[in-house]
Image (tube, rainbow, N blue to C red; front, side, top):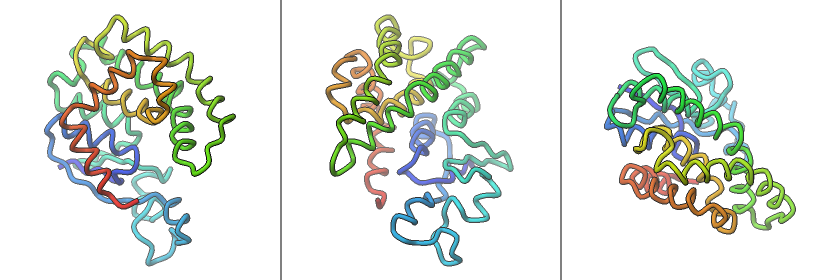
Length: 219
């Protein structure tokens, strides 16, 4: 059985969504982020601390102390986007690449999202979650996203999905990256194709199931 080490309120949502789409058998081993314990003035290294990203057992799996981690029959893989690509190839079917060209394209978009979009999209999510938003910081993040989102918008003008003209793991990976910027309605309105594509991805039953579980998880 596939084990995902992490929690719903993390990048593990990408893997959980993919697993639900693929119909693979899996289980979640809860691992809370150390910074969330520190925010509650709990020492993550204390013997009685909840199992977290600095617990010795977890650090043996992930020396970086980051979630999610996937484990199956002794095979350990980190990095959520890489985990999803592996899960799709393992399961096969329409979500997986059909040939070497699609494999390369899925890797391309995963790397593009991770290097060009994710950092600034995360900044936007953080700013919108703050009690008082720094408008200057928001403007900077929006400006940083203008070029990569224009690239995504142009791609979706001629392609219904990220790769292969069908919903694949590449859509899951990019959708979960772009989701961080979704709270910024003004920004998303500038890229209507990307906005519409994201909403279609999130209308899928597997996403809805994952998201409901995420909302039910304690903050």
